[in-house]
Length: 573
Ligand SMILES: [Zn+2]
Ligand SMILES: [Zn+2]
Ligand SMILES: [Zn+2]
Ligand SMILES: [Zn+2]
Image (tube, rainbow, N blue to C red; front, side):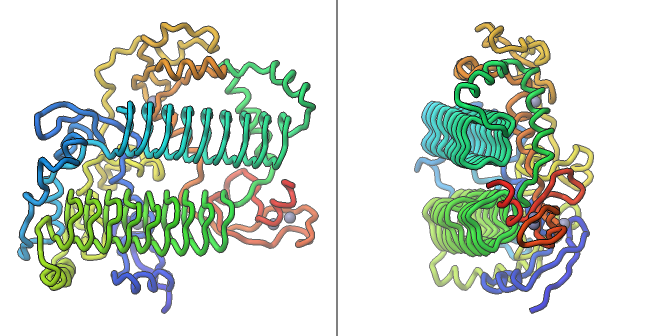
């Protein structure tokens, strides 16, 4: 089969469908998509609120509860525990298929009729202000997190302990401001580490301990600005640096940026891979265009997946022993053959167009079901009836597509239209990975909601906070601080103040959301460019400039020195 160039229905740009894509579509029996890969990714991401917590009235008793959804969102919610109880039945909302209207029109109606759980949580202890999370204890404002204890403001960092402000970092302990780092202990202001202890302001280091302001180190100890010191000298030198001062931190970061920009870096972030492309990809093989993924095999155009994911395409968030998943989001944990699903877990099988369903098999166009089989639009059928009906509905979806308010057609084979999402563009993961200004998002047909600053009365400007943590008194716990960037309110908790004091770290000048966005901005975009290795040093495999080419998320106009794997390895030993 040849590759084919198509025009994206949404952005009207060309995109290419490769023979391998066609083979996959053939295998899972879906037509080729009509949206380009980026528009498909955005379409999934606008369903996923990763870092906001709202208050919303639940539909049972009219109580205001913490919720995944803003008050204005056109979606009905129940309190989490009630939703998961047997005191109500989602099958009561079942609809008969009506061939006079588009199937997705009916599914949209059902989606806004059936209540959703207020938050997406499992097994939380004393962690009320968390969402998209499971098995947390004593955590506060943590999102997309599993198995964590005593953590604050962490996002997508599993098995975290006693850490603050960590992002996409498995197993951090006593860490602060750490991104894309696995197995870190007591690391501060770091990214791209592996198995490191007591590092500050370091990047791209593996198996290091007690280093400050270092880049590209392997198995090193007692280094400052990439230079070795004796143990005693190292600690003497550190005493001269006041990391408790906010102004000092800015200066250290500037100095570190000057150091690292002169040093080569690898074209990709990732380790233990074979035949892959993307960025932040680990332990994977035969997987392409994968970002922030781990343990993938034969996966394409996917993001944020963990632990054993096989034969999947256009899959955003989760994984965990899942295979044959296509165009799905926030779904995983032993799922198989799942297409066009959102928030479906665990052990979903052979299901399509489902939302918020759990442990179901052979369901088509259902919302909020648990442990059901052979259902369509929340109505029960026999196996025989189901198997006869589904092909009929698929044909009906092709003949009579859903048309959104912008005239875009959704036949069988497309993920849910944006209009199904209860969120505005800026409340979801989409704004993190595809930043857009308000005007631009609205022009492109996305919903936008300005954040309300809440009921809080600001008592202090972030710029008026004491520069040094040693000058901060307990009175700070009573203050409502105005974020330096978004101007919304935030507070300092007791646990966090204790942490800042213990590790001599200044108070943050930005609110949680802005800090998370700052960390996200440091990662490269979900995009790849074909480039040539920039190395012109003496290496055994090349004379003059290295001829090796690669796909990298470093755009050609960026200032970093980007090397191929071979050259990079020879530089960092
Ligand atoms: Zn597009
Ligand atoms: Zn802010
Ligand atoms: Zn090279
Ligand atoms: Zn070289």
